[in-house]
Length: 224
Image (cartoon, rainbow, N blue to C red):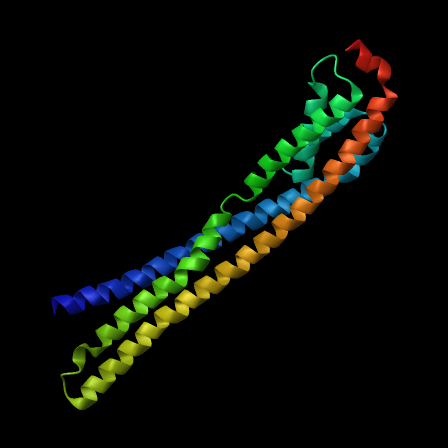
């Protein structure tokens, strides 16, 4: 009797664990989706408004605009570039300045990438472990379903059928959780790849604009 109660408790614990995984999956997926939506929205707004400012060399106005849209990954990258440009060491040539800003944007892109990837490991962990949790619960449930095999035939068959049905519910739940986590992870991975492409394109564009701006302002640079 004690072993039977123990097996039944393990099966229920597997269900509870899968439900916790499902809740964590939902919270993480919703949080990532909202974060990506805000990043896209603010990046589009910043790109639309900042493009003419950067082409005209109005760097301070562009930096102020980037701070207002700092939720967007493009705005954060541009803000880092403009910040490096504003605080670059004195007596630095144009080529050295361009290389200095390029390295600064590379470091900023790494920080932004790490922030965007935050909590992604939760989705990968759930996708990888949920099937094993379901398999464990199913095995325990199947073994528990044979507890009435020593009873009369009709009673034993009914108990075995009900136990197997309950055990298969755990399997179905684990597969549902794992598939949902896999879909969410693939969605996040696709968004991160898009962000990566956008940041690489923005870095090249910012480098070009800053280089042109540096060539147009030789006097200011020498004065620094």
